[in-house]
Image (cartoon, rainbow, N blue to C red; front, side, top):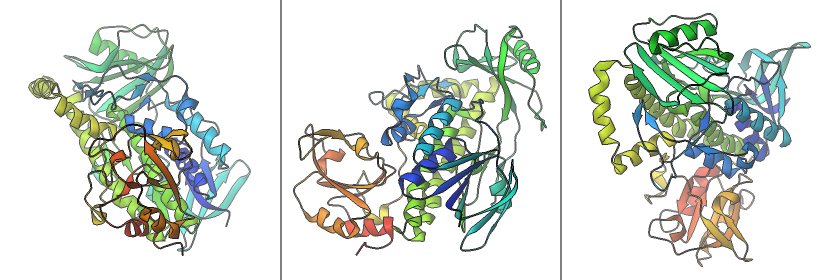
Length: 490
């Protein structure tokens, strides 16, 4: 066997997965068909949950200064995502290329093998391993691994060759995009509507502007290549009346409102993550964020299986937990496409929703949906505590030795964490049977906890991806550990 896992695609999902697998102790090779990292940046920021995910691994300092998003919108309807003390606000101005560079460096430091210029041409799932055919600069090769994960984008070869269904809706509209230099434009963060279509303009870094244009009445057509900047500039002029043709294009592309999701995220020893599992209109920049969170959910589970710390059945929970998230993603981006791309006939609905979302309760609900902070995995078989299946908020703690830390910092090693906040020795005693898989930490909160807050519990079991798997006084800890690992460590 050449490695434990072959990951196809060195984008955000593939590189995040590679790092997670290495933290779990599994060997991984990432195969990327392009010979050098792409400078293209479909994603240009992070939602609040992705910021938390990076913080759980200590990655935020690698990104440098972060600029909070100045506002928010849902299909061009203004929404204040900074509700709840600003917890839902994301960041903007971080190019996807910058994110990929950071994740590649992190994964390589952890020991992941990243092979660029290696194009997967096919594979065979033999039942106990996967054989992958690869075209390399040195010629054709065959590599074997225990599992194969397709993180190879919306046109995924792994999805196609693996026989995964990909139901959904076809494209009906095309949007043109260009990242340009030497252009001064008013910022149109939420998009601006004109009789002929829609415009968006947002800074991408210090000296680059992203422009997006959609024309009403322009029929969708299947392209064989990318549009030219001349085409983008002409469309911008028709819709806005402004001439941007003198700008210097850095990258030109197009995207559509097609919405599809893989019918299953796992078939035998082949799995999908990121855009290989779901495509949609990139409304609100959710795609890269959901893809990274797919990788974090899968990474600890696949790593635990490969290192003998969990039963293979744990991999089935990847589809069970992330497929509903992908379905909600398609639902909300399709709703945004209707608002975003519709003409004057949609204005009454936009006006009503603007009033609705001016209410903080409504804005909080929508912000939780779009940010990913309100994702709740179905762990109802283990109890009904309000925190069960929810992400663990960052909580300031004092350890037994008097040193200060946070629950987020404790997740840096990507180990399952039993956080003991009370005096009952029972949870720690139960966890001893899983001692090679669970880190027990005794601590106390730095301030009195309000009812319902995590620090109000005597103990919590927190998964490596930051989600609460058990809360004291609600369900059986041994059962929760069994669900995570498939058996005791005895």
